[in-house]
Image (cartoon, rainbow, N blue to C red; front, side):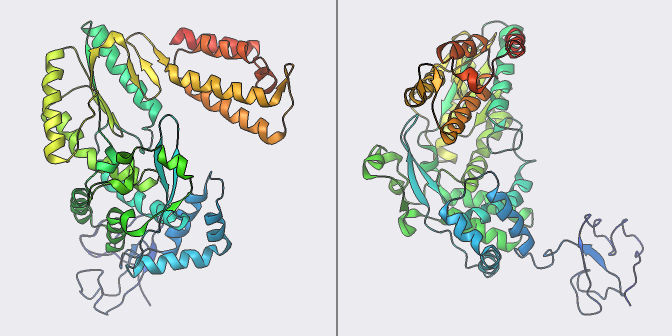
Length: 443
């Protein structure tokens, strides 16, 4: 019978000398007198230790993939691909488990469609089975990198969305404008960022960190398969018309990327990989240039400082670093302007005293509501079916969620005045008006 007991020098919760405490919820793995790996292949004297299932062999487990499958399904309208996977979910997950553990998994050709607004660009949606792998792999890699990323790296990080980035930039602007007066900002953007990312360089960065963090080989192989994936070899499944695809400039098409360059836009792993690739720039700006007020959201980054000449010097150094270390170029349009001009950033215009919604965002909102009105409103009365109502409510709620993070009281009042039928969907009561007025005064 196996007995539980601590060897001398063990920490609480561990049955093996010098091994850290076992994590809660771990499964019991028992190896008795068989050349086990629990303690450097020594006889374990009938002791056991708690380890996570799959830890000993570093495999992709069914339970982990099952959890990733549930996450991949959450909040998504089912596609045909997903429904096919779900119809035989257990067999599908078992198949993924086998391919991952035998190192034979490779990404499938993605679904390519074109997003026309605000400008035409390709989106490559992965097959649903690949999305499950992304949700299994990326959280493992995030654990390695989350503590390594700088505080002001935003996008695809928990609590680091667009609104957090805008709030942080607003704080930087107010610190400089109120503390020292005046001030300037330098706003830069990577040219053709995702198509220019050099995959071998990304793999070297990631491999070094994964080996240091002792990531299981199965996860390393999956990461390599994703990074090494090239649509030039596998092709894509076109989900757009030839006319729509022609609207994308040739240099913006992933298939036209230079050899060894380019990762797809439109999936979880590519967003994370881009943060990994840009991490050296973040650390260069913060730790070498020692810029106190810098933040980045994907390929768009801003530096705020009271000295214009200092920003010009940093621009030269950043340009050189990107070109020599990351093989990236900045867009020709580089903004070095006074803070009083306002910073156009992530759908907002950030000024020293307040933040406004970007005019183009407001115009898009009005256009969508006007288009819906022409189709479904007659003499001030809504004549649509339930699906159309759900559509316009979703549009309105989405824009209101964006507007409320800016000084937008008059803007929202103006929308109700222009589209009075909105009151039938979203009651604009006196209490709601007071709430908006309070937000406006706070801003």
